[in-house]
Length: 330
Image (cartoon, rainbow, N blue to C red):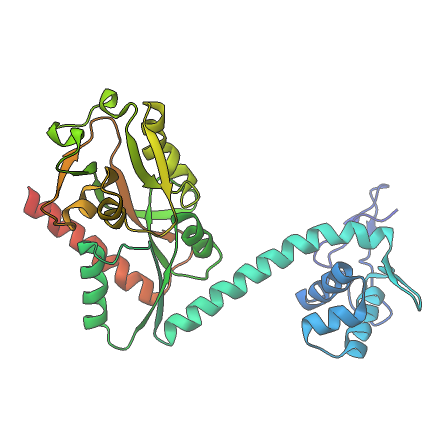
């Protein structure tokens, strides 16, 4: 029995003798085929229909059938059982399908990256931002300065929660994302933009308004408005679940709603970041820090292995801005 062919070289069989590479009737080595054949094979295997596969690939059905037969002839293997009623994979076809599907995923990712590079060359930067983060002074300053410096580059802004933005980043649908911890940092480059402490926004006539610092025991039995856990489950567990564990009666608000709006409408304490509370200047409310919640970390994120010229420009601007802020603080 012949050993597996590698790059068309002669390899030893089980007897130790040198064997020639397998060659099809067309004179081509069985290993010398293009990725195109594998993608055609996968489309037919996934659909078990030449008609549906051709429609998916946007090519002529007869051409697809010709390419599959050509592929089978190159391999010297039958990949599909065809009859008038259905298409079925052979045993050999089933063995080939798994590695081909993995390859197809890589090809799709590669196409997404090349599309992103082409868009960047054409002057497009796709940025993901958190809802209601537009008043964030650093984010606003970065994007305004970028637009001013690079008038030839058009910003496309996508809004959504951190999990959605990171998914789009990994799928190459956006180039950069302003996100909030916690999240899986695997395969990401991160710039820590700021740490934002949590506080309570409290009506002046509420019992908690007399406190200078909100401690864990102070919230037991208190009704508190907090963001919905569906918005960012990991963040909810880190920042807000401790309130319920301390005995607070928490009321999750719908996604993408402003904490300050609920503070005014409900006239009850609302948990929010200090940055958000400082933007809400209302003489009927006071801000109080919280002792037992960790600070909320905001990042600018990109994929380590996926960079575009316009993306690098904004990234370097953010690095420069942070370095300047550190020097001023020092």
